[in-house]
Every structure is written in structure tokens, then in C-alpha cells.
Image (cartoon, rainbow, N blue to C red):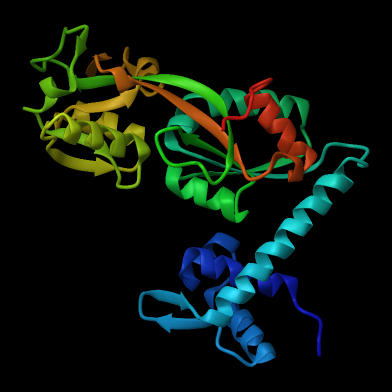
Length: 300
């Protein structure tokens, strides 16, 4: 029997993680037909169906679940091998797969990555912006080496360190009734339409959860992907919004919006840097964690 094709195994795992062949093909920069062929070859080799092909994606068969567990084990062994052998490398090279939420990408990562690259110029960084819950999943599955997430979601499946803290603010169009205030409570914004981030955003989920807890009815007029889109929608007069100060203060002088502090106990947030197992990471990934959170004690 022929040796197993590791590339095919990785592609199969990607299909399982994305639950969709087309999405796996985009994530791996390979044609969907080629991904499908690789999976079909694995099915022919083992003589069992690994996937159920559905109209809107795939479901994994019991045999596919078993194979996926073996692929995860192989991936962990490969990571341990890379981490240990990289200790003997004469130079810091390699790839770090970094996933981060919008708050981190907008506020802190540009400067921190510049500092890291200055120390490790030959390391390539594959940066992906995504929601915190998807980042935790990616780190846990080994799709990402490091994730930067909000502390307001469940991250118990991975190791974390404190990365940064930020503060939430309210922005309104210039000339708005709230313009000129130093601070507002969330309830004071309930009589106005809101602009927010897309479903899956930990920030948006936190706002809606706190509103529900306080019996505040937040009316969402429009939701967009990034902070820039939120600011532009507010400037156009479509509503008010809650954003971290790092996505507000650098733009306020030239922007057509006013800003004030959000006077709520939960307006102070923490961002975390997360990883599956520190000792199993390559040297360059461990160095990035130390650059982001030097001397931090891992959280429980």
C-alpha cells in the first residue's frame, strides 16, 4: 500500500474544519476541484466514505472523524518536532500564523509587529483578521499558532496571557443631541439607532448581552465588518456606535463625529494572546508571544 500523502491529509483536515470544500480551497490557495480530488483519493485508499457531500457544505462520516483525529495527532507531533529542532537553527527563520480580532489589528498590532520584525527580520507572518470565537477554534485546532482575542469569550480550551487593555467609547455624528457630553450610559443611547459590527464580533456580542441584562433595547440599523465602516456610517448620520478608544481617538480630529466615554463598569476590556501549548511552538512563535506579553504569567 502506498505511503500516505501528508498534503492530502492536511487538505482533508482543512475541509473538516471549514465544513466546506470551497472554503478550504480558498484557505489553502488551491482549486476546489483539486481539494475534492485529494479527498476522493483518500477515500479510495481507505475504501470508505470520509465525507457526506451536501448542497451547502459537507458532513463528516464516522470514518472521517476517526481519520481527522489521527491527522490532529500527526500535526501535534510535527509541531513538537519543529519546535525542538528549531532550537538548533543558526538563525531565526520560519512562519508564524497569527490570527487577531479587529480590536487588536486596529489598535495595537501594527506597532507590536513592527517591533517583532525588527528583531526577527527573516520570519514571515501570516496575519488573518477574524472574530475572537473563530480564532479560539483555529488555535485549538492548530490552524493558527497564535491568536489575539477578547477576554469576554470562552477561551478555556487554550493557554492565554494578558496582551493589552482598552476602553470603550460612544461615537455620534457631529451636532447630535449627545454631542458635547463627556460620558454617557448605554441606556442613554437606546433612543437612537445603532451602528455595529457583524455577527460573531465579541465586542458586538458584549454590548448586546449587557443591554439585555439591563433591559435596554438596542436597535441596530446597520452592521458592518470593521471599525472604519462603523465610523463612516456614524459620520453619515445612520446612528451611534460603541467602539474602543484606539479606533476613535486617532481619527477624531479629521472625522465628522464626536466621542465620549462609555460610563459602564464593563467598558474596560482586556485582550489576550492565546496559543495551544507554549512549549510545542516554534522558537519564532514563542518569541512573538514574549514580544507581545513580556513576563506575563499565563492565565488559568
